[in-house]
Amino acid sequence: MKWLWILLALVLGAVAGTYWLADPGYVLIRLNTWLVETSAAFALLLIMTAVAALSIGWRFLRQVSDSTGKLATWQQNKAHKARLELLQQGLVAVLNRSWGQAGKALSRMDAVTDDAGKVDVTTPYHRLAQLMLTAFAAHARGDMSLRDEVVQRIQQHEGSATNLPLGLFVQWHLEAGEVAQAIAKLTPLLTRNKTDPLLLSLAVTAHVAQNDWSTADQNWQSLKKIGRPFATGLRLHAYEFQRQEGFENFVSSDSTTLAQVLSRSADGVKEYKSLAAQDQANTELLSAWANALIEHQRQADALTLLALALDDRWSEQLLVLWLKLADKDVKASLSQAQSWAERRPKDARLLEVLGQLAHRNGQWQDAKDYFETALKALSEKDSDKARIYQHLGSVWHALGDEHRALQYFMQAQSLATH
Image (cartoon, rainbow, N blue to C red; front, top):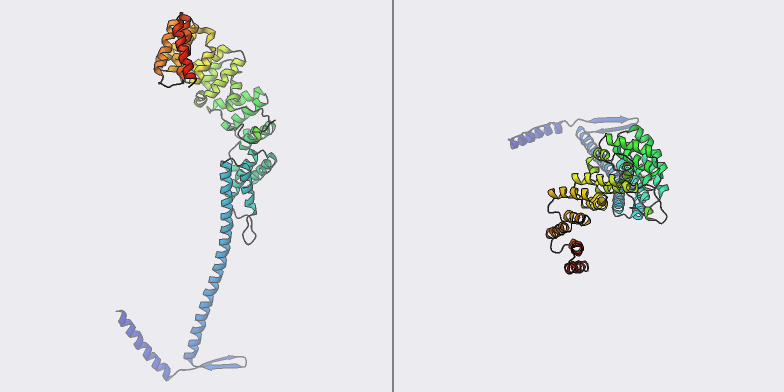
């Protein structure tokens, strides 16, 4: 079929060509005094040639235009890539705690330009990341003036209000010991976000640092109502400026700050039960709370608090602190420890505590049994054995068997020196 169409086209072309040669016709073009006369065939050829030339010229111009645009795009992409590489270097330096290197890499981003001299071709998100990392690095190395300057630029940056975590800059002020500035920033934030747990925690910390106990307690009560744990995210003694000689900060760690608030309550049991589950499981907080109660001469309350906490979640750290207070009523403390042992019969540390309490109560035989059972619960090379051998030596000395007492003392000394 294809060849048939080709044959037909050739035949028609031959017929048309024959008639055209017989009568080629002519074309007359006049322009002012100029006259151009030619055959129709030649005129048609000229028109076709002109159309082809215009088409080729148009394509060439488009290619030139596209090449120019691609070159400009390539130049912009090159500058953009350079900025991203510097941003990456800054991030890695921050993660490595190389604050000076981070600041240098991030500041160089503003010096990167394309061939047209344009500076800011970075996306708003990359620009915000640059500013945040710059402020963080400046804060970490103690350059507070630069930090505050960059923070102002961040707050004016497009879209930053919805991307920044609330209270971040308040946290930086508290880490730097700038309590008044922190409270100034907290006040409007808390007005708009009265149930934000981070802001409430920061407010408690800031007011405790100023010994404003009534306001601190108000914020603490608000935090308890929403059932969220106390957490500020503060990084104390983690930065260069915090380790400098002479640096003073009235802000304490989370556990110490909250312990000061809790220790002022008359009902420690109620306070403990109202804590969020995460705070109830926070051994550092409970230890700090008990120590704060001891400082206030409330040893009995501290003992009750520790016993309540150990009833809920076992902690060797809390048990050791509880034992220091157990002498207030050795008989009651021994009964309490025995109730724990019913649930934890193979806990070597608890058995040791029972032996110590029995020893203090003059129950020598019971003390010996507890210590010997504790020895069996320990592995062969456990370093705690030295301490228990020492206890057994004291028990045998109390029982009047100096020979056995000396043997256990020597075993304790042998383990302690290895």
